[in-house]
Image 1 (cartoon, helix red, strand yellow):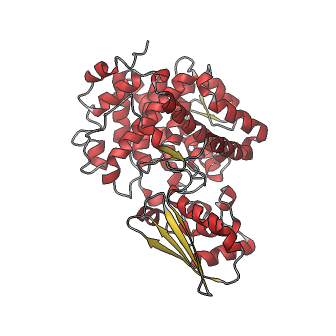
Image 2 (cartoon, one colour):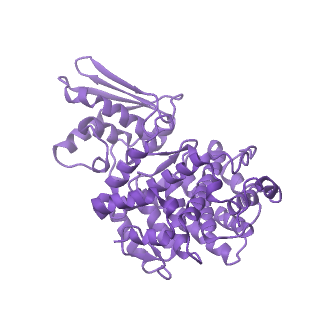
Image 3 (cartoon, one colour):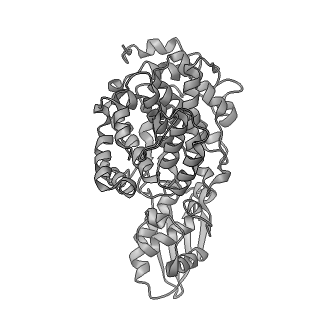
Length: 462
């Protein structure tokens, strides 16, 4: 029987020599119903968002291409690729599901760091659920997701200040979260889960040089795959070091610079960093969302203009400029990280969905290109990452300005459950049809009541 949280502080003291041991002890001694109710709902929201994104992205050409590649390298086909009749070994299924969940850039973002934990963590737990010895109920699955998210978010927040922008936190901290989610699902002991964290920490990597290409989305996919492999290796008896996180040559030293581990374990099991996870209303980099909000607000005035536009000033945070200043993206994937494209698309169409996340043809293509040409990125060093302003300057000397203090989907303006459900159904309808999409959404919200997660997963196959 799992230990109660009243016992947890005593148990943790036995393992508090290192953060690796503390995390492993907390995750393996936990159970779903001991997590605060509000946090449990936050875990379900992340899970629903991730599964919806997986179903929505499974038909992407890049996913199909990598799915074909995995045929020759996969072991026994024991785990399902959601929304398909395809099975792969657990690591490759996690790879494909996480890739599907990321490929349209519609995933989640932890507000206190730039990590996208949901897709790698949920994909790892899904794959492990079909691999585990014995049936996995919904509560066990969600508890594993909760601890995968929590550790990814805590670690990511710690290293954020010292981590170079060139390194992806999803490829690093996200891999740790995937290992924990898979390990808890598989029923690893505290020692084994500590090994899994150590193995994942030694494999963690990922640079942002591939932004605008499929390599950007392989980061969460490979984080999930290697997280599952780390848990399976630990289950088989392969060791990982207790100093894997905080040791002199550990994860924090490698990625966090001079970051202090003070506070890393504060409130472990009672307060949850995962509740700062947020969800995207638009399929693109989170740093672009304030610009989209501003341009959607300007759309009626843009549509009614009588004078040509001279300049389109996009006043953004330093992070937005560093990650998404692409005046003329060369592919649909590059569009996902182009401030200029999304500003133009939102102004022209008055919406910002998957259809607008593509290179456009016909007269709209020329209009979009002209607006990108007229766009000027202005970096405001004190602008928050969820804020921006847009100024349209017309040839007749007039101008229109919209200021966004907090974008939709941020912690201050979070997506509601109804909006998340609508997002799920809209994405999944594209691949599995409206009736199946609505059914899958309803089942995902009710995962805590599911007796066998493997049955739920296979019902999402087509």
